[in-house]
Image (cartoon, rainbow, N blue to C red; front, side):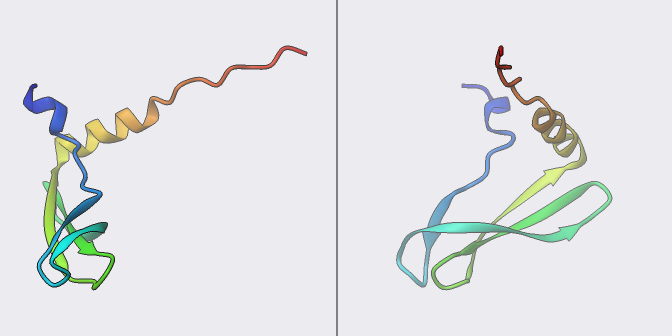
Length: 78
């Protein structure tokens, strides 16, 4: 596996020290800088911070380009 496969990785659950188990998390935008954005992962059980993720300007452009590529829906013939 290459490093590129994990560039846009987002967590759905992480270990929480307070809950003492892996918990679902939500991502919250923490800080916007000219060259990157920093996100905080919050435990949905207790609300404590369990991790962070940084997206650089280049990764953000790539993620937006990938989001714009949606599969075409099949059209119905009448």
